[in-house]
Length: 138
Image (cartoon, rainbow, N blue to C red; front, side, top):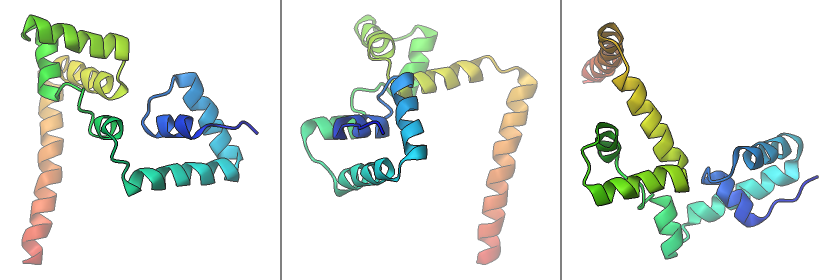
């Protein structure tokens, strides 16, 4: 059984490990009740709320550009200094949350008119259903 440090388990929860390290922990989680218990403890520690500056910074993703700023990066309209920061954040830090947001923005940008119409219809239909149910409850 592989042993993982508390820091590795917290990094796993933060999605801050490499793919290989993540896969190793996920294999261990499938096979070991002890590792699953240690991960539950790590989650509980997080839920209690660590209030160090570093913990707050990581939890609230204070260094991450907003989705709108990532869109500005895609369109090349950011201030030069901030553009360099966003590029650093994406390439050097390789923030998984921001990279996923960027991929999503790129996919939306590449959509054709029929795809956009279909996506908007799906969103409208799901919202209309929720609103209809809310109105029926009144």
